[in-house]
Image (cartoon, rainbow, N blue to C red):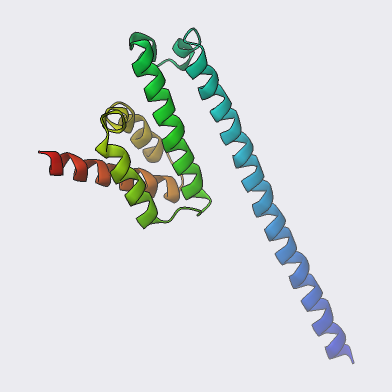
Length: 150
């Protein structure tokens, strides 16, 4: 009888541990989504109001209006892909297809030429393995498109 009781207690404890692990993961995902939503909102505000662009500290303010808006919108696209990749909604092969198509366009290539150093710095500064992989894939596809165009 004591063995059965011990087994039931162990199973209950394992269930509680799994529940806590799941809750922790869900809390982390929720927090990450909240941060991404804030980032999107800031970018959209900058797209719609050129007075806010210099606040990013980037040379966006020096670009013509249309080009600055394109770079901000391209950042929204790549950030969206990054978010989907982090939560494993986008797989490596899918990301490669998205990036390859994106870099076929002038805006996509110009965006990555301007932003890749920042993405690479982020990856090198201790970002997650997923972010490092994301940047590596984007860089590989960018290089692939440039090579095909040469």
